[in-house]
Amino acid sequence: MPERPNILLITTDQQRYDSCGPRASAFMRTPHFDHLCHEGIRFDSAYADCPLCVPSRVSIMTGKYVFSHGMDGNGPSTEVMGREGTLPTCMRDLGYQTAAIGKMHFSPQRARHGFDETILPDDYYRQMARSGYDLQPMRHGLGQNELYPGMATVPESLTLTSWIAEQCVEYIRERRDPTIPFFLWCSFSKPHPPLDPPEPYYSMYRDCDIPMPVYGDWSEDEVCPEPFKRIRQTHSRDLVPPEVIREARAAYYGLITQIDYNMGRVFAALQDLGLFRDTLILYTSDHGEYLGDHHTGAKAFFHEPSAHVPFALRLPQSW
Image (tube, rainbow, N blue to C red; front, side, top):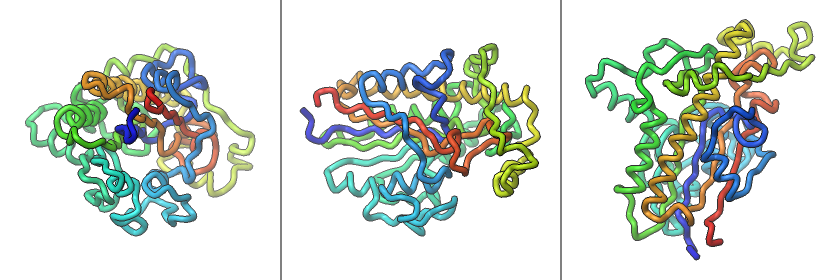
C-alpha cells in the first residue's frame, strides 16, 4: 500500500458539468472519464467558487475561497500567490517532485509558484513557429471567447491538446525522478474557445441529436438583468443564430472527446510502467460554459452551465 502515491491532477478549461458522465447526452464518448468514475468517486455537485479562469486556478493552488485569497477576476496571480503555501510547495514538503504541464494562466506566465518546473502552451506555439511547418495552429481567425466554431488548422497530432498529453507522457516515462513520488498537474486548455477541433473530432457529433440551449424567462431582453445583458453583448454572443449554436455545441463536444482520448495516452504511460493502479487521479475543470444557454456564451455568472463542473476522484486501488 503506497503511503505517498503518485498524484495526477487533470483539469480542462471551461467544461460544463453536463458534457460527461450521466448528465451527458448518450452519444458522448468519454471512456477514460467514465473509467475513473467506475473505479472512483463522482461528485455531482461540484461548483467553481468563482467561474473565471484565474480565480478558480488560484483556489486550486491555495485551497482558499475567492473571498479569502482575494483574486476575484483575471489578473496577476503574483498578487495573491508567492512560492510558499501553495499546492506544489505543500507537495514538495511531503517529498514529491512537482510539475505543471499545460495551461496555468499564471501572470506573469513564467511564475512557477512553487512547481519544480512548468511546461506551458507558449512553449508549444514557439516550437510550432520554429518548426518550419506550412501548417500552423490558430490560423483560422477565431478569437478566445467566440461561440462560432471552426476546424483546427493543424492535424490532430500537432494540436495543443495532443502536445500537452505528449509532454505528460514524456514526463512520466523519461523526465521524472523515479525514486520519489510525483505530483503532476496536466492542464488541458480546451474545450475553451476557439471551438476548433481537428478531424475526426470536428465531424464526430455533427449528425447527432444535439441538445438545444436552455432559455430562462428572466434572460429575455426586456427583463434581463442589466449586468448579464451587458456581458452577453460582448462579442455579440446574443446575436449568434441557432444553427451556429448547434454547430458550436457539436465542436465543443468534439473537443471534450479529443481531450478524453488523449488522456488515455497518459493513462497508458502509467500502465506501461506499472503505476496506473496506485496513482491517485483527480479530474475537474476550472468553470463551465454557457454554450448558448440564456442567449450567451463563456462564463462569469453563477448559473448551472457556468459554475457547475465535472469532478471525479479515483483513489489508489490498493487503498
